[in-house]
Amino acid sequence: MRTFTYGLYIIMSKEDEVVNAFTANWLTQVSFEPPLIAVSIENDAKSLSMIQHSQTFTINVLKTGQRELAGQLGRSYNKKSQ
Image (cartoon, rainbow, N blue to C red; front, side, top):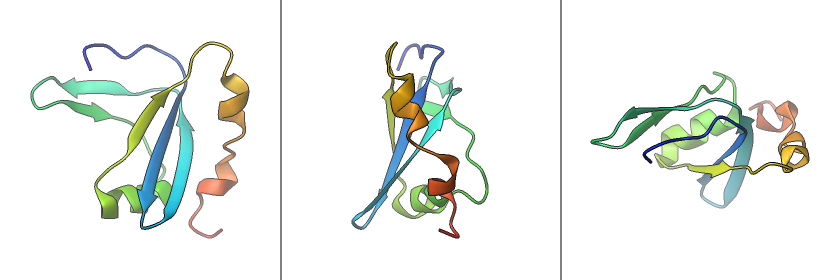
């Protein structure tokens, strides 16, 4: 976790058997020891409640040319109301 590149990330969460993901274009390392990162998540995002309950998530760093993959994760999929 020494350095995070600037780019696109897919943040994934899982609660029970439900998997959810959203794109982020910014995150930052907060601490080396313990290893901590910060990423912004909308208050009404489904992923937020899933991460709060499961206490786990993954960060997937997209490489050049994977922008379309990030575009497939539309905002509406992350809303609790859906």
